[in-house]
Amino acid sequence: MHSHSLSLWRTVLLTVMSLLLAACGGATPAAPASNADASSPASTTAKAGNLVVLEWAGYELPQFYEPYFAQNPGAKVDYSFFSEDAEAFSKLQSGFNVDLVHPCNPWWGLYVEQGLVQPIDTSKLSHFAELDPEMAALGQFNGQQYFIPWDWGFESILVRSDKLSELPQSWADLANPAYAGHLAIWDSGEANHIIAALALGFDPWNTTPEQDAQIKQWLIDLKPNLLTYWVDFSELAQQMGAGDVWVASNAWADTFKSLLDQGVEVEYLNPAEGMLRFVCGFGISSQTKNLDQAHAYIDAAIAPQSMANFSNEYGYGSANLQALPLIDPETVALFHMDDPAFLKSTVFYQSLTQEQRQRITTMWNDVKAAP
Image (cartoon, rainbow, N blue to C red; front, side):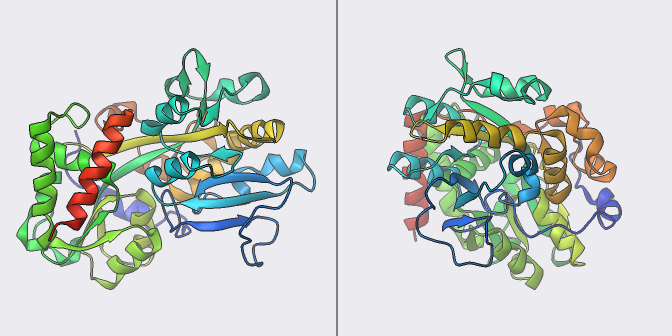
């Protein structure tokens, strides 16, 4: 379904509000930053008593959890940022002290297995019943709710359509020699394992050792096309805007929108094997000393208006079904937020085991080290 590009919506997109250049996975790690005074240099340690959130850059905007401050006058939140799920998981494993963490669904089970998060008391969340039940079920382990879904979105191929005589039709087309020196791929072992498996016709979550060897070789063979591994969202947008990167893999929707807003000729493709889709959400650290505040923060974040503010800002979907009428209708249509059939056509990120995580990490390190 919809194997052609999303260019039909380019005209619609140009009318959508201009969005900030930040989103899921958007920046290199930073020291905790407080919303209390954005102009102050970020301190290296959170202030005593502040809620500490390990978060994707760009998700710290206060309009995404406005009720928290209305209900907790004088409250402050400190943020530390991560750029990829493996990084966030490693931070908590190493003893990094936070109250809340915002990973995506393939990693939730690993946090539970490692004892890094604790069950969430959903009776303290006034908006829990409004959440998509299928998304909420993803956060349940051993009969308890460990993660609260918040956002969902796509990863796909973003191209400078004015630089290409022929657009990619599949993930396998990333290997087209016509893109030599102009390809950017996300610096994520998990994501690249998945797209290589899809390109080779494998089930990404049930690969054999022989298939893993083929995946590794496919990614190594891709390197002549490679200009860069992208990590920072704004850097990728800048490189595509400048015309250095013509094809970017695993790009997010907000990258597409921000470049269109700048008048750059880009298209967000739906590969033959399908776009990737993910759900991310909040977990409460097993080490928190701010349990009530952590619950209050989550409840404020999943409130319908908070979620609509987020969707309108970045074009990601909301886990709260009551937020949908509050989201700009053009954004809803553009990103299929009310189209279950389209969502079912995507490739949904599945859970990783600890063994898979370690194997993929090793593979990715080997790929990057290869000549």
